[in-house]
Image (cartoon, rainbow, N blue to C red; front, side, top):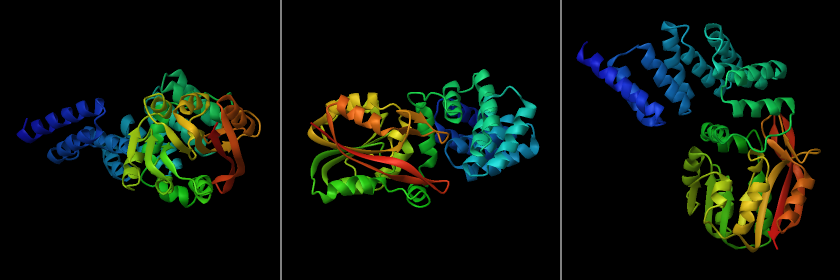
Length: 363
């Protein structure tokens, strides 16, 4: 074995160890160095491509996976991850073909069935999607996630909450283009609608919390009204974008309920703009939040509106809440529902999504 090949093998094994421990950036460095020493190795190409998919760098992953598949057309790992990359690049038909190829080689690969189900759902083929997701569940692949997606498709009773890993990965992948997409094609206005009302009333606050702050779209509004501003989000990459805006005094990577159950606050303003649609049942949130509010503190948030059930999970995999359930939450937790506004929360597939904007105050 030549010194270069031996060194490439050591780097490859180091990359595998980093990857299996969740250290994606060091894994990428190791695999890239191995590829430099041993160009064209399918195993190295596949692993480097997989890491770049996991890092959300889909355009960079595709050529690597293409090269691996040119040598090994039945490489299931490369096929599945190329399908993931194509799906994220809004090429669902091509992605679906890769899942078909993967399943033709290895019909018991649960993650291929799960990805196939998600792609069929996006293409509006809900019956086929449900069958694929059910097969993924039977194979034990990411059961909580696939049950959640299946509930959204079938309109089953909504799970109380989505799998945390799903939400975290969703927004980690979305972080780079989040602001442009949300404020452009989706015509998202929740920060302005929620906070302009408080600003125009001349409110000033000591400590504001931005729950599910994402990339920080509420941050400039809060900065103009509050002495101290804290942002909390489950997505580390969203927080990187928020940090670049330089408007938060503190940014915390945490689940909202876990954060609120800790020694935080007190707050006199809390905002959750388009956040509860990814939370589900709000009772745990309010139970943890209200003790962190000062008397007279303001709470404002937006939700998608459910006209029937108190809590509904839609095929979009976003939750909707009824007006009655919002009023009941306020009453149960000693909050005054000061104002409720009904209006479009965003545009989805060219259609306005009905929403509720709520302003509450702690008694």
